[in-house]
Every structure is written in structure tokens, then in C-alpha cells.
Length: 448
Picture 1 (cartoon, rainbow, N blue to C red):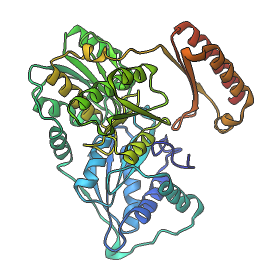
Picture 2: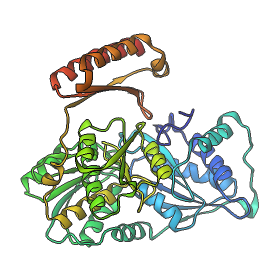
Picture 3: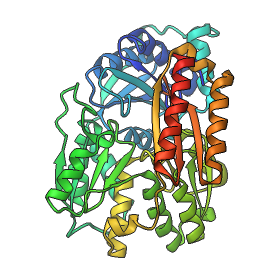
Picture 4: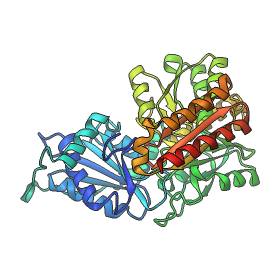
């Protein structure tokens, strides 16, 4: 992990860890590293709805313009819209200002190359070196060489039209709820799904700058579950703050997580001859039930480290067409270069429409093994010591010994937050919860 960039860009408390000064420096470095210096470079900027968006977007744009880049602002848009439009509009780079599923006080910068993909580690290291080590000095442009800023008027329309082109059926007869997390999906979800024929109920689509992800969206599913069940809807879909992930709710109000979504879509893609390499890419956090599903349905899988960037790297390397995470970050590489919550919801609805099956029946194809997760808050120094602590390693070994081949243990450092995540999975829920607490106590004792 880099000094500025984690597994999903630079992220922290806005106006503190992610300051205006840092945003300006990143703007200068991005223009140096990612743009075509033989012509006037062009960079897109998009944001989610959190209150610090304008402050950081202005600072970022100032940094870009100061080294001669022209900026086009997209306004509030989903992260995957930025990834799509940088390619569609022919820009050199793009930056999304968002902290995804985190509360409003956080913000961050996700950077995309001209091809719509997030930055590889080597490019992030180059940007970090310019900012932190001053290995290069950004040029100072004067007069007519200073960059300009303009506003894009068609952003949301262009993105919605593209998403509509990814499905070959309409959703007439379906009545769904959409929880927009008071975030980026608020600008696009209602029109997108209505245009495709669904009757839509909109929840949490009144952003005020501070209510993004607040008791709503994919990290707080309770309201959507109750709403879908109470109104007897076909299904519900919850997005996170920047709409790059989605979790679903079936007609009975039960959550359908990313593992099940990948299973549902992979099975349909296999039936239609679209599952490239006959393989789905998941992470080490994926439920054991997914592996059993793959075996029963003749689908191969490969598991990567946690983080959508690692899923994407494996998909690109091997040419696979679907991959993702339990959290609902699903990548359909035939259509997108990053996870897209609304695109994922479209694909799930398409499977429902084509098969005529309710979401509960589709989700039942995968049995979920009991899984428990404890997030332990640790210090920055503790986070750095995690891999070298012998007592933590011993606690993990003891738990693995008790579980044998009936479960598994995964303890890892979060790539974006000051946390160590303790995850256990197995046949006996009480046993894994006890073992998880024991490991978490050791982590807390040694790393706080």
C-alpha cells in the first residue's frame, strides 16, 4: 500500500487528511503523469454528494489548471459514470471525488486513466513521489497557457443512455425500490429504471451534503428490507454513496449479497455462452457456499486478495467477464471498467425477466455458510505491526486448528480504514463467533 493511496484511491477526513493543499498537489501530479504533453491536456472531475465536494473539486481543478490542463466538471455523478465518460469523451484522465460508503466527514480521490481503469500501483507510486519526495517540479504555466474550467451539461443523460444499452429486455410489470444512499445514484437511478419500464419507489434520494450513507444505502439495508416486504415489491436495490456497489433485497425482504449476485449472473452468462473462461473472479472473503455453488454448476472460480482492483487485475490478465466482492462491488467487464451498482441491478433484473423466476428462487441456488466479522479499530502504528505480531499469528493458528476442514479464518488489515478485520466462517455459528471474539481480543490488546 502506498503512502497516499490505499486500495481505492486517496481517502481520509476531508479538510484534514484530505486537505485542499493535497488535492491541489494531486491535480498537478496527475496532469504531469497521466496526460499527453504534446497537446493541451484534458481532465474530468466528478463528485458524490458530500458537503466537502466543492471545496476539494475547486482545489483539484486549480492544481490541474496551474500546470496547463483544461478541466471539465461533471457535477454529482456515480463513480462508474466517470470511468465510462473519460473514455467516451476522449479525455486524458479523470478524478472522482468520493469516499464511497464512508460517512460525510470523509472524502477521497479516485483517479482514472484515459481508458477508464483505475491506476496501477506503479503509477500511484510515481504520483506519490512527485508530491512527497519532490522528484519532479510541476511546471508553472502563465498567460494563455493556464488551463480553464467548464461544466458538462449532458453527463447524467449520456451515462443513463449507455447503461440502457447494456440490457436487451425491458422491466415492465416489475415494481422495485431503489435506495440511493443520499448519494450519487440520486441523480440517475429513478430515470434509468423508469425508462426501462419498471415502476419505481425511490428511497434516500434527498442529499443535503451530510446525510450520504447515513442509515441508508448498501451499508444499512434495514429500511429497504422493510419497505420491499411491506409494499410487496418485486425486489429492492441499495447503492452506496458513489453507486459503484449494490446489494439487493428479494420479494421477501431478504438481503441478496454480492456473492449471490455473482452466482446468479454467472449462471445466466454461462447459459447464454457469455461466461468467458467459464470462470468467475471473487476474493478470499467470498463465502464458502459460492465455491460449492461453482462445483455444482460446472463453473470455475479464482480468488484474489480483497479489493476490487485485484479482482479487476485478474479479470484483465485472464480475459474473464465477471468478478466482484461480497460487499456488492461487481464488475461486468463486457460493459464497464469498474464496479457499477446500477449496471449490476440491471443485470439482476434482466436475469429475473428472462427466467421468469423471483429473486428469492434465483438466490436459493447458493447456500450461505455462517460467517462472522469483527472490525477492530487499531492505531496507525498497530496497523503497520500486524503482519509481524507472533501472538496474533498464534491465535489465528489455534482457531484454524479447532475448525479443521469445517471452516476457515481470515484476518486482514483494511486497505482504506484504521481497522483489522477478523472474519471466520464455518458450519457452527456459535463456534465461529466465539473464536472470532478470541482473536479480536488479541488484536485489540496488541495493536491499539
